[in-house]
Image (cartoon, rainbow, N blue to C red; front, side):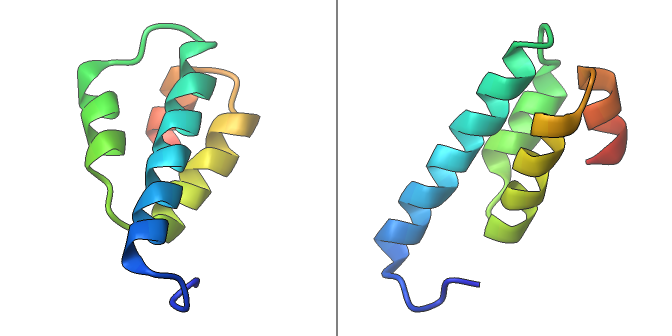
Length: 68
């Protein structure tokens, strides 16, 4: 996806996306520990991007969890 960027930059982008996903979900309620841990542990930028889009469109944490 963005292979031309240095690995440090990719890591920074990934961490920003993790924070964004969590912030969007926190607006919906309390994030279950297993969901939070899965998001924090994800190392695939494409998956994080998909989750960010999903978190922006979802109506509940349960809906997000069922589609992740």
